Image 1 (cartoon, helix red, strand yellow):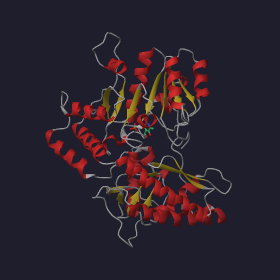
Image 2: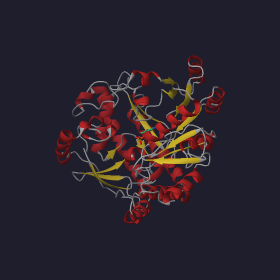
Image 3: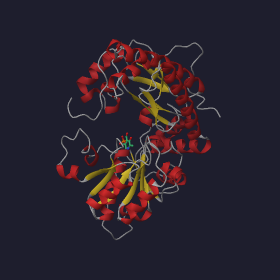
Image 4: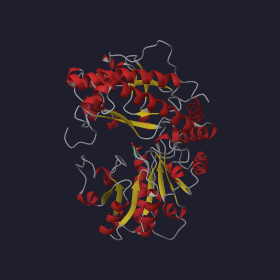
Amino acid sequence: MAANCDSAVVKPGQRLGGTNFSRGRELSRRAHALIPGGAHTYAKGDDQYPELSPAFIARGVGCHVWDLDGNEFIEYGMGLRTVTLGHAYPRVTEAVARHLPLGTNFVRPAPIEVECAERFLELVPSAEMVKFAKDGSHTLDGAVRLARAHTGRDFIAICGDHPFFSTSDWFIGTTAMKAGIPEWTRAHTVEFHYNDIPSVEALFDQYPGQIACVLLEPARLEEPHEQFLPRLKELCHRNGALLVFDEMITGFRWHRSGAQHVYGVTPDLSTFGKALANGFALSALAGRRDIMRLGGYDHDRERVFLLSTTHGAETHAMAAAIATMATYVEFDVVGHLHRQGARLRKGIDDAAVASGVSAHFQCMGRDCALLYSTRDRDGCPSQEFRTLFLQELIRRGILAPSFVMSFAHSDADIDYTIDAVAQSLGVYRQALDGGVERFLVGRPVRPVFRAIG
Ligand SMILES: Cc1ncc(COP(=O)(O)O)c(C=O)c1O
């Protein structure tokens, strides 16, 4: 089956990428004077990319993007994993365009809100009710509030091996960037380890009758050990806590019905976003009717302020989600993501062996959403080598903070990428031998979560 047929294609002999980023740099100077950090999302910031990189993306089609200086790239960030079908996927943009002239936000709900909920619950049958919002953080905040209200407890247990759940204090307070977050909030989020049932048991022992929910991504880099998720659910319920899955990344990527379908474990609540509307802002909190309905008013318990945002039900975002979900039903999108990811992974692994860097550079995670690790001569994780690898890929036309697949990545894109990775790993080898500073232009990238500047 063909991928997104309208995506840009690499022509034989074509060279992508470049080293002239002057117009982007100029705009970046203006951005930093106006916007703290120069970007509205930390993950897109200048400190996440090498100095020799496009500061702005002007447009994208499929998995190709163009920067302000006219350089073209094949990319693997895909809108922070939101764009699973490809940039400007016609079926989605046409659905949005059809809705825009009808008005986008009204004083009472639009009919499309019901249609979108029906389509979502057909795809994620383990959920009985759903409420939409604009971003993942809000849906997780809703899950936490609901769990606290339902159980009458204050503590939240989160998986400490998973890097991000919400922009809210209950999560940010656990990171290195905890300035401005009250002690009570920080003290009431506790951490366990993935695939480690004893670490969860220890929390239930330490805080008996006090943990409202256990929250994790059903999988991230590691697959769950057999029985980990079923035992986790059983342990939560035995201790009166709810099990919450954050499916922001796994949803519509591991499977069109979520990782909960792949692993056969239905959580009490789960959250979706990112891939739900192919880059348009829509997220979802879904789950058990008896818990979700506390956010409504057909019950006699204390009401919960679940999710309610001014922009939460914009009609064009719902139209985008319906078109995206229909594409998942019509085509084997998830199969494509896994197939192309497996091809790319094999090509990269072979190139790493051929360049003699396989002890220092590795692909990790599920084929549909690969990450990579970069290590220095001593085998220590290295931001300098990450920056060098990014820099060399960009020079060769690949923008890859990760290797996140989309339906638009064609065989030609993957082949081109493998070639660029092989050349970049050749430079990596030289840097291992001769010193990374001889090859890296400018300062290295830095982690988002750091305490000081
Ligand atoms: C696993 C996970 N959960 C939650 C979120 C928060 O989503 P949002 O940025 O839409 O608020 C993210 C964002 O990257 C995420 O990766």
